[in-house]
Image (cartoon, rainbow, N blue to C red; front, side, top):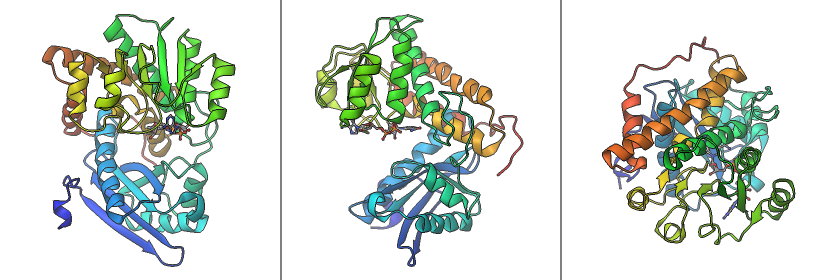
Length: 362
Ligand code: NAD
């Protein structure tokens, strides 16, 4: 099969395979679109079963980044990279530096960031040889005092605002007091989101594969713990998927009585058609790449200008308005929110590239 016939090829501008025999690096970098700026997106380190699985992932994820950044009105394009291998056994600083040399060969058309299997120390290793990386700074964070390049606090803040927008639209309420939120996954984003919700008087139901996170949520936040499969049918107003992709599907929807789905996970819907099913069920769904854009907004300010927590927060607060616009248009036009998000992102992709009023720096 020709590469150009690949089912996930979407007129990507550039897809490059890299190898470095000395460190064993095998990587693919996909640049989907740079109309609004350099392509920024995470570097996923994952033991793909086949090279085609890696290609499929990088093609899909890079396209998603174009939509996410355009929707968030950032001067960024969409790109993503994958490093093939088991991060627990095969990740070394030398390999990450070799990957940094690959970034240099693309001359800044793609900027790497952390993703599954990579973290701040890896971004620091890349930064030893390349400027085309983000998320390595030690900075004062605006959402909970973390001082690393970790974007999770910003993502959690955006999700919290997204839940408030959905509640405003669906339940006509400004506050969250007494509502029940079911959180799937109490990781970097999910746990921080849980803290913000608990402060607002939300009753929490949670599941996770990690018993330590569950014990902590029970002790610190009074969360009710349920089994992994029981979260969907839990008695909740809002389902917040903050773990894996594709957990919103016909099977989980059949069990769900929540009237809102709003969480941080990427690729929450198992397939496009599930967006229609959600709409038919009259569930208010906050499209994943809209509600979880806090992290990319944070990274963008860190990379392209002076990091000012107040300005970052203000930009993240735009997620609330964007979601309200999507919910209202969805109701008016009787179109699933997932379809509308794509439509609006494509409109914003044609806009003049935003500047954020920042002076460019690498
Ligand atoms: P994380 O790895 O820190 O947290 C994920 C949590 O989910 C972990 O606690 C893990 O134990 C739990 N989990 C794993 N399998 C589970 C299962 N089957 N059921 C329930 N829980 C399970 O990841 P994160 O950084 O918190 O990100 C969460 C989601 O949000 C991911 O989908 C990620 O791609 C997405 N996202 C994160 C950011 C960010 O800034 N971190 C930005 C955008 C999107």
